Image 1 (cartoon, rainbow over the protein chains, first blue to last red):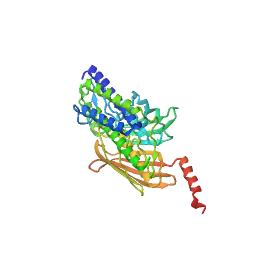
Image 2 (cartoon, each protein chain N blue to C red):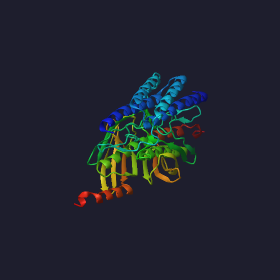
Image 3 (spheres, rainbow over the protein chains, first blue to last red):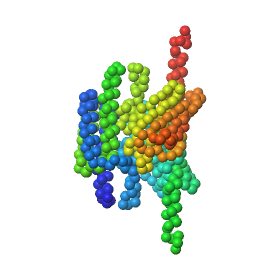
Image 4 (cartoon, one colour):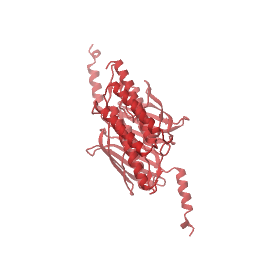
Length: 214
Length: 214
């Protein structure tokens, strides 16, 4: 796809996911009569059948665009096309920082009126991983520790993460979520590890770089 | 609601959520033409409007049924009515064990073909919390530590959690997810704490129990 085709694709299928997210919330909160609920379910099934007529079979994975940027449209936290994802728009800087402001609706509830503790973990895992990658030391999550300092209310929230230190292929990242008053609610510390296969790939590329033999 | 009304409500609105989950997956994987995607999005918006005509405004919270059982239909992991939740059906025993077999589709992806590390954390938080509650020492998550031992593939998975030890109002729970071959992929240790308000409520009830004054 050219950059232009990608932009149009993202506009059309991003809008489809946004509509689906609104339906996810509406069907959770609705109090319509049983007959209406049954009719709507049947109409949803018809739309699902229509979308399945042309479809990939497997998950979206990660695409690398013409511009070299990765597109993780299926990602459960940031995926533009994933209606399970809020989705988070994450800003990053090369010094290993990542942050986001976002809104969590009723579909992210755990205790009454509060964000599910595991949803906080989900978002912090993504934010910490993005900080590690932004700082040039990406990895898969090896360990993640969450400290729950106070309840996280549903609604407008923010989160940030930053590289604490790097030791070889292991990166330690810290982060937290904050409520709408700016109080940290959940703190995270993550250890991100570059897998062996990725280290070997990087080592091979380093060895074959022409400037090594000049 | 009577038990009968509850059962019919769960059947109708559970089916609506199941249809919505299938749509969430279909819209993520679809490769229909742009025009079809736009038409489907417009039809989804019309269904959303229909469901919103009669609707609660806030999140579902937790209801206590006539039978004394709690109904967490909005919960992000186990919620019958929540299309973000897989949902997990969790079995529990009074000795503080909780377990579940479940399927994770492409909407739970992180690395290509793999479950998002944060989704594993989300499910383990719920399973560990259920084990604590099943064993009679419920609490809110105070701390959660995840060790990622090997990648968790999308597809059929299982998870289990058990109380490790209880100290007053603090319960330590361990658990793990397993892949389809039974290999543990992510291990968890959680500390669950009964909040002060709940401890005070329980103390008050204990004091006012008639049998204390007999």
